[in-house]
Image (cartoon, rainbow, N blue to C red; front, side):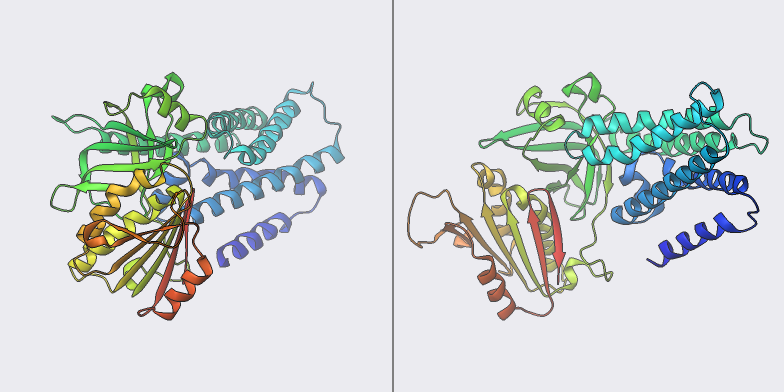
Amino acid sequence: MVFILLYLSGTVTCNVVQIHTVADAGTRAAKLSLINLIPIFLGGGYEFGARLLGTSLYTYGFVHRSFAVVAVLEAIVHIIIVAQIRVISWSNELQFYGLLAASMFLALVLLPLVKKRVYEVFLITHLGCAMALIYAIWQHTRSAHERLWAFPVTYISIFAITGALQLVRIFYRNMVIGRNPVRLILRPYVGDVARITLLLPRPWTVRAGERINLGVPHVGIFYLAQSHPFAISWWEDDGRGRAVSISVLFRPRSGFTRKLLDRVEPNRECGAWIDGPFGPTRVNWSSASTVGDYGHIFMVATGIGIAAQLPYIKELLDGHNKAQVCTQRISLVWQLDRVGDWESARDWLQVLVRQDNGYMLHVSVYDQLRSDSGNEIQRIGENGLIEVHSGRVNWEKQLDAEIESRIGKLLSLLGFKFGTISGT
């Protein structure tokens, strides 16, 4: 917040200091718009940009949007002032490219509104508009006496350098001499749920909450260089704490995930590539605390949102066995939504129960699709430590029970279908 206030105050100051005429104000606004575009052209998307600058995904996204909004506002001020001074015409080459740049600005502002619905279209269109914006700025500024053409050159240089760094990172993660590159195995379940297991040529120590960007050329020619974000749900290590395979869980919607399920042959290896890992996400924005700093963890999951919770349980149990965490109790309440939810994560959950030497993990599963009536509890897993209930969970009652019996500081992790949030 302090950074934003200083940034906005500095921008306003730069708009008015040593401005003597309306024309000066228009020129200054144009220069400030060009300056604010510089950090926006860090290549590789949010994940790589956040990793490169050592900040969180949320912070990087907020800063990226802030610079973009200010750049657009300055451009609008420039256009309004120019329109007051002279007649704007599409037939004038200089003004044509200025209007083209303004149109690309507008498109880049509006495109995020459709990002979640048509992600693939967003990726291609966003990149295309950005390149068109650079070209329009180049043509619009190349005749200026103040060498404003240096700005589009700067944009291209930054984009190329950061893009090259990302490419090196991708090659490092996917290619090892003498080993097979990353291989993908797809395992579908009933209820339109699927699990992807990725065999890694270069192991790394996975942390709960990490994410990867996944590309699968087999899906189609338009997906050769296109990647999509997934949260790591599980991993198998080499005995030294480094993952030799990672797994992600998903329910296809449309676009890439639907094509992936339809075009990749199940239970057979095929080529893939990954970028990452990215993260992990912080569990508490107000402090630097980790999940293991809390004595009592209350985890809530619905549907395949369980995939967001399993890595934290796995990490906590491993840390508890090594006396590296303060956690004494983990309570997981999982509400099944659809057919296939239970089957997709059942084996992982049973592995965690077997790993729980200190009996700190308490699992309650609520299945509204169970045919039996009444309140009979079915106990399954190692020593019957997984309780399966019929019907829907009473969240208020569950939370009250956890608060009443809490051990030390309580952290709640809420895993839903498309993400995880936390609170204390």
